[in-house]
Image 1 (cartoon, rainbow, N blue to C red):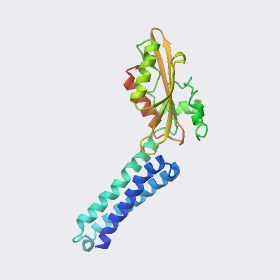
Image 2 (image 1 turned 30 degrees about the horizontal axis):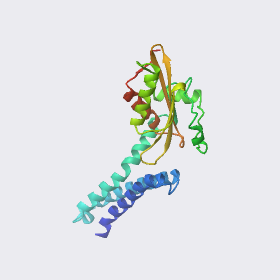
Image 3 (image 1 turned 90 degrees about the horizontal axis):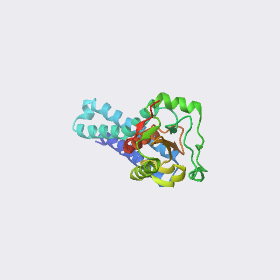
Image 4 (image 1 turned 90 degrees about the vertical axis):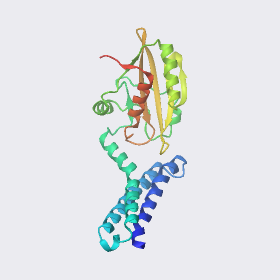
Amino acid sequence: MRLARLPVLVAILALVLLLVSGPGTRMDLWTFRTGFSLMTWATYLGLAAAALAILLLLIPRARRGHAKTLVFGMLMGFAATVMPLLGYYTAKTVPFIHDISTDTMRPPEFVAILPLRDDAPNPATYGGAEVAAAQKAGYPDLATQILDQAPADAFAHAEKVARDMGWEIVAAVPEAGRIEATDTTFWFGFKDDIVIRIEAEGEASRIDIRSVSRVGKSDVGKNASRIRAFVKALGSHPIQS
């Protein structure tokens, strides 16, 4: 009976490590690197719990009378690995960058947000041709947008969309056509900064958005997905090249 409970206990430990990894980082109880380590150990322990449960299920003497407990331990072990392994898989399938812009030749620039990034490991300056090439290969759909509204109306609309998405507006400067905001990720509470640029394009408006992580070499696709969500909510269309 004790042996049958072991996978359950290991799986519970894995789930606890997983569940505290993100919230603890958000609450500044430890650094994001510690949070990642806790998630990694949760994955190892979850896989170990599932493997041990499967092994015991294959042994008739161990399985007899304890099959439900072992299956429960196996499922809990696998449950602890789903989110970390999905994140790992995503990180391997997206570009290893953290600065995404709809205009890679002339990326929108931060102004008001710069002081907030003083201690950030990632700089606010754009990475240049290498980053642009990686983005083009991984996110070819991201491009400058055209909104069929005059710049003043487009600015008001873009600001409303940003607020509706839950972003913290740091600056909104209509005369410069610039909106700056910060978004906080759900699990680890990472701060990602966004700058939106609105310019006249005939009677319409040309809109570019850039999203940059403050920490982490890879954003695991978060900045690109954020830009796509903004563009969809904005109701714009890509500029015709």
